[in-house]
Image (cartoon, rainbow, N blue to C red; front, side):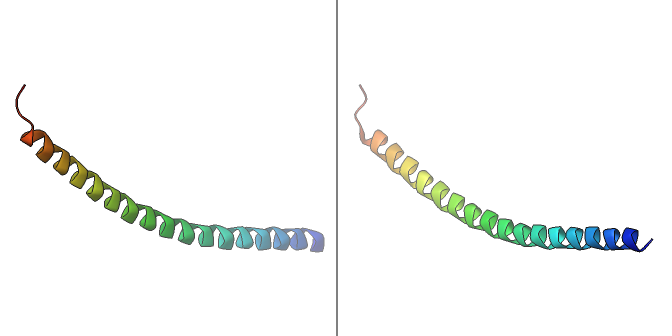
Length: 64
């Protein structure tokens, strides 16, 4: 009986440890997602600016 309780206690400690590591990793991943979202918005804005400039240049070209 004591060995079973000790085994359950060890398994519970492992589960708690795994939970804590996973929770910390999740927090880090949420931060990374936020960072990548911000970077994506910046790149999308730069792309839109490039497309707008290209459209303006194409409008200035004479018709062929």
